[in-house]
Image (cartoon, rainbow, N blue to C red; front, side, top):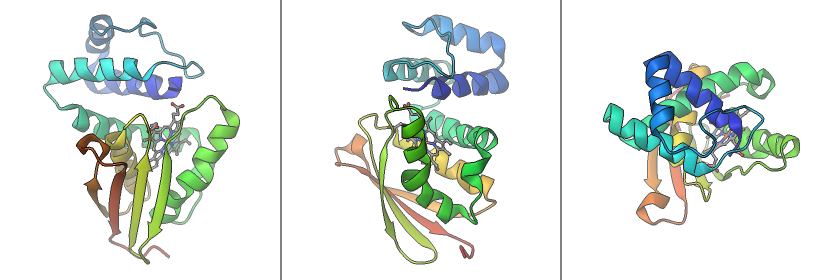
Length: 183
Ligand code: HEM
């Protein structure tokens, strides 16, 4: 998993919980890297899961809430780091561009990335269904990223996570409704 996923998580924890808390989590978690992350590095998914379990214990917040919160933070930071990807008219166009453009470009830049795949079902102006597939099963991170994108585009959208790999389904399904004109 690319280092940026870890460096942004570390930034969020420092901002939201303080440096002392962050350092104690990194010391307590079992991290082969020692918790010294760089955005160009690559780290095991198990390190992310280890940090999340440690946070779940310490903060008494379930991992799925932690991942949603992090996804939202991550998206707003990505918007600052990669403004070109956000030069689209609206939230729906942006969401359609993740699999068709953003993650495609990232695969070219970083061939060792392991990015999720999305299938889209366009349900007209105000509806979009996204199927998410990834061996990483980070669907709650994806939910947070979508919520962050809605904030970025100053849009309202509802999300129903109607099938889930964590409940034994083949993929996760996000059924989105947009509450504004998307054209
Ligand atoms: C709503 C928008 C987005 C969603 C739902 C989304 C979803 C995800 C998810 C769920 C992952 C975790 C890996 C996996 O599940 O296999 C991921 C990884 C990643 N995404 Fe996206 N993404 C979004 C937008 C973006 C944007 C705008 C960028 C950068 C410009 C980006 C860059 C990355 C990177 C660098 C990784 C890590 C890849 C790796 O570990 O090798 N994503 N994305």
